[in-house]
Amino acid sequence: MRTVELWGSYPPPIGGVTIYLKRLLEHLYESIEVQLIDFSGVPKPSKVPNVRACYFLPIEVLRLLFGRPKIIHLNSFSFMMSLCFLLFGWRHKYGITIHNQRGILIKSRLKRTVYSCFLNRCDFIIMNDNNYKKKFVSFFKVKEEKIFVLPAFIAPTDKERRGIPVEVSKFREKHNFLISANASKLKIENGIDTYGLDMLIELIKMLRYDGINAGLLFCLPIIGDKLYYSKIERYIFDYGLNDSVLLYKHNIANAFEFWEISDLFIRPTATDMEGISVKEALYVGTHVVASDVCKRPDECIVFANRDQKDLYEKVISLYNSKKYKTNICYKNMIDTPKEILNIYKKL
Image (spheres, rainbow, N blue to C red):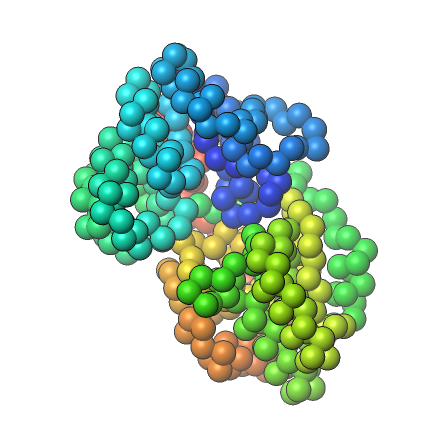
């Protein structure tokens, strides 16, 4: 089989896609010759096996033209990347994993045409949702037989464990009901907080008003929208929640351990494809409440997107039932790395 290259970002930064690529790489290099081309632009603390940094796309374009043929697995659905592969990737077998549902929101006719041509030239397309697959096929006029529906969740292993920082442990000890959540960075789209941090702060305010000693541990490796972050800090101060909300602004490679010590994990995102952290939390036995913007695991409690009242009612119901004190059981039914390896072998 040809050499395989994964194109995307290796952590740090920490996020659903980077963690997916890290774990996929670790599974694949046990069986095949594989390398991850890291476009994150973030220097790594030390040299990572099978990972090569690239800070300049034209360098990789030259390698497409003159390097030996290979299988390239893209993990960024960008216009420039699609155009480059249409023009210069003809010597290689290539495909893409679609990590979000923003593709069908493209309004530019030119971009839509380029994307459609690129996708029809792809040898495989991977996504995690059958409902989105139908919309995707209709929008881009893609051949359905080249699309594979696979979960993006790859279970963490014990070697990823790093332990809990002292700051987080102390915060855990101070609260009887600890809620955790995360965002790759703060982002406002169409006037809406994409990751729903505003809803979580409002929720903590309501729970505290009910006399519940609730705390919010929110993992935020990159601040993102700094103006909005300042507003969030002001909300926390005005609500008197300084001791009840911890915005943990560090890159963490073991986020699942944070979910593991929590009583509840919440994913209040306004848009989502799968939510790796949702499945991580379920995998380590923590109950999950998540927005209904995409298909969620059956074990997940779902609330109506951006509906503060529904979110509160689902959380307070769980709290009153005391079910959050018992571990939930979740297991991925599909071995994603094995299925992806099978796709490569058929090319």
